Structures are given as C-alpha cells and as structure tokens.
Image 1 (cartoon, rainbow, N blue to C red):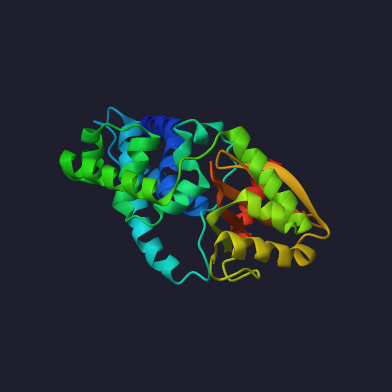
Image 2: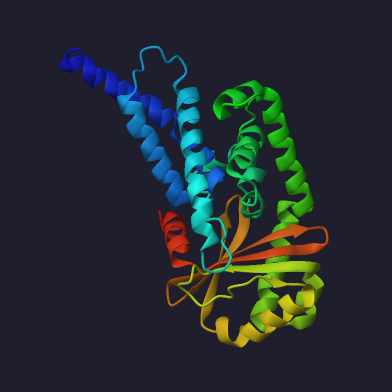
Length: 298
C-alpha cells in the first residue's frame, strides 16, 4: 500500500469511527456508569480500529460496538473491585443529555441515574446484556455473538436483569410529576420543613451521598422517611444558606445543581414513583461534578 492509499484508508477509518462514536460512548457509559471510564474505552476502541485489518469488515459500527462492549465488560470487572473500597456510597457519574441529544436518543430509561445505580448490583455480563437489549434493541442472536455465549443464555441474562430491576425499583412517574416532586423536595429541604418532607418521601426512602471521601458526606445511606426527613431538617441551616439552585437535566431527568460562590457543591437527583420520592441521590464528589458542570457551560 502506498502512502496515499494508507492516508485515504485512515481518513475513511476516522469517518467510520466518528459515525459510530456516539453509540460506542452510549454503550460504555451505560455499562460502566462513568463518563471518564467510557471515554477511555472509546479511545481504546479507536486505537484498535486503526490497527485492525478492515478489508473484510462490512459493518464498521457493528464491529466497533462489539469491541467496545467487550472492553467495557473487562473494565467493569476491575471497576467492581475498585468500588468495593470506595469511600461511602457510589453513584453513577452524571451526564448532560442536553449537550449530546444522541446519547439520550435511544430508550431513555436505561440512562436514568436510578436505573444505572440499580444495574451496578448486577454482574458486568448481566448488566451489559440488559443495556444492549433494552437501550439499543439488539437481537438476541447478535447479543449472543457479542457476549460469546448462547442465545438461550443471553435471554436468561436479560431476564434476570429485568427481574432484578423490577424488584429493586418501582414504576417511575411522568417527567412532569418527577420535576414537580423534586422541586417540592428541594424547597422543603432548604427551609427544613419536616411535614412537607415527610409528605413527599416514600415510607422506605433512601438517601445516598457520593462524596468519594473528598467532601463531607454521609458514608452510609440514610434509610426511612423519618430518618431521611430529620436528617435534611438538621442539615438545612448548615448547607443551604448562601447557595443557589440551577435547574438542569442529568441523564434525561430533571436535576438541581447546587452552587455556592460560583462553585458546584452538589447535583441532586431523585427516583420518583407514585408513592413519592424513593431515592435521593446527591453527587458531591468534585471529580464527578466538574465534567458535568463543564458540559453545561459549553
């Protein structure tokens, strides 16, 4: 191959890769729950794509998706070990879906922070099977090829993931109801209104704060309506004065970005059902907040 042919080949490879890039990131992010790790996986897929003999590859997106999926599974297996030593609750890294509409263009529910949080409890292969089936509608036969297993086993993997999700999470409300309850919760938390908080929260609500050991945050989840409501009442005079609220979108759902003196302090999201708020998720880890806030400014 002469230099000109090689340059043309790499140009074509770059075009094919960029055409698939959004999907590759979407797969890796949903499997890992980390935008930073997903970007690393996509970069590794690009490096492999450059050195692959592409002569007989008729469907670049399918090939790249397979490579990305297998890399993501390997990364998830090692990430699981790392997260066992994570200080306090681990929450997915939020992403701004308004800055990348294609990221939320697939079935949006599998991008929800609460769904990604629940899926983290599955093993990486189960989680990946569910993501590819539910978010990207992959046929079971293609899933089996990607996961290097049988079609029957793939169906079982997806079925187990669905059962786990239905057990761990109640049916979510509409986007309008979700936003209304989240705004009511933030208002009640700011004022320390115990009665309002108890009315909004479900009986077995759980509050998670992901500080990553960097910022002061509860290292254990707070469980139950009474405990959660009283905790927010106690924190109200210490946390909220001097803060501002910016209503944003994270992972396709409404969220509240709390700032103080121009610095992001927390991103507040919630899992909401007909019973009220089931989970309150506070991302306060600066390493997770910074990329999200930067994407809002772009």
